[in-house]
Image (spheres, rainbow, N blue to C red):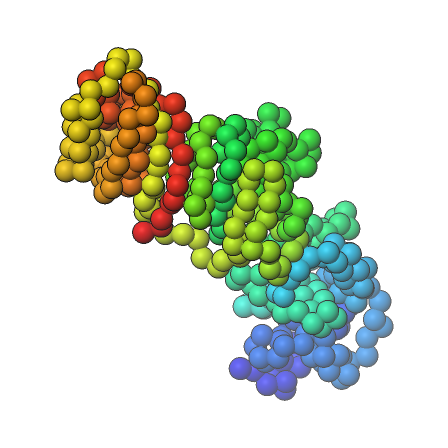
Length: 383
Ligand SMILES: [Zn+2]
Ligand SMILES: [Zn+2]
């Protein structure tokens, strides 16, 4: 650490050669003196030397005129929930060049750059004004002040939510097709949401979330999937969703949110993403039809599903095993039956019924052409 006595000679030399504002002068020495206010130090250093105080050679007095930029920041952030923030800046290269020039001319090492000086000062003044904190690592809001065109850009930290949904009517697909214009990235025509229609489970939930939290895109992690014609009953299918650039982040939601046949249950903001892969069990009711009349004796063969794992072969050559832990069946007509299974999550239900790349499958066991009419989810349990 240096004392003020040690730095006065060089400080005086610099002031003699260049007009500097208090902030820029103080910044050149505040680190080695372990002081936090550049401005106060600069002022102190100048008391011993008379300076005409014209334009600051480095910043053109930008540091003394930050008020318009604070106003930009206040306006941009007025609708946002946040408790911490950080400021970044785009600065005219000429300012940076002059700062570099002074630093190298007087061999000043390990000091803040003029850009850091400006962003630190903006953060300090802004947080003082509205009683928030500066957080460099994980701020709620990130401001980028563009000093070239006097604009302020804002990004807000994503929020993560967890909930479940039930679906009481057939016909709605689970996933939403991305906006055709941007394939989901977000563009002006989809209002930066990445989707432009809201006619799916994803769409209905997204619509509610955008209306509640604001934000641009919503990225879902589903715990399993279903068909357009499936129902999702019981306590519902769990999902996780990340909302980019939310405006609100401190809301609590009602326990139930309904949008037509979709009800979202217990949707809450969570702090950590789920551990992947997510392990779960599904209780599924399948309605299956056969080409020929079903023999009761053949149906008994379905019991085999409880005694060995079901092997699923993918086109890619990948192979996985799923277990069934519970099984019931009931003949409903001479060529249809209902099958209830509790299975490891991710069993491809339709292929399990009619395919030959899932083994043992229903068609192989019944030894007849089988068709899955519908499959409904009665319960989904996270393991
Ligand atoms: Zn300056
Ligand atoms: Zn788009």
